[in-house]
Amino acid sequence: MERTQAQQLIRAAFAARRFAYTPYSHFKVGAALLARNGQVFTGCNIESASYSPTNCAERTALFKAVSEGVTEFSAIAIVGSREGEVNRIVTSPCGVCRQALFEFGGPELTVIMARSEEDYLETTLGELLPYGFGPKNLELD
Image 1 (cartoon, one colour):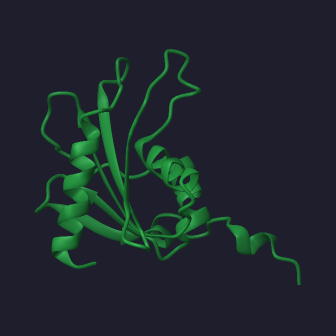
Image 2 (cartoon, helix red, strand yellow):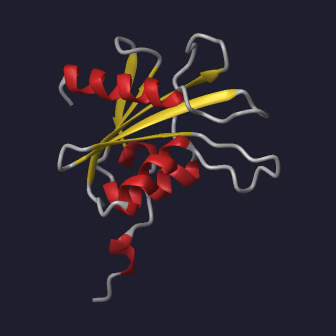
Image 3 (cartoon, one colour):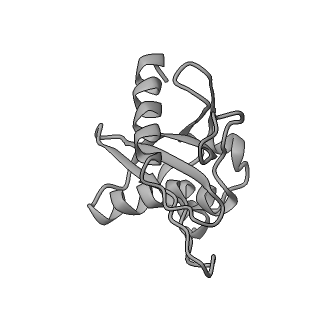
């Protein structure tokens, strides 16, 4: 992905992270999902005291997009850190998010995991989830 485009997506993920609701873990995550049509959908993580209904930033962005009729994506940027800390590590999507993203982005979806706009790792969802289960697995011959 072009560096300036990646940086714009990272900037949007940082902006989304400001809205994270994390009273338990204090680990705030923001995500910015780039649709193939050029739209960007952002999300943040949202915790619940019972943990099970907690939703990750990546799925928040994905579900926002799908609920608005957008189902094809080319890239996602993810940023995360403990509240009040500088991003010391990159935050990768959890297994559930990888599977949900695979449904709509497939193995070629670009995944950007950033500490800052200048310091990030770029890979594909196929590299993070090499044997993902998607719509093609359910096709009948």
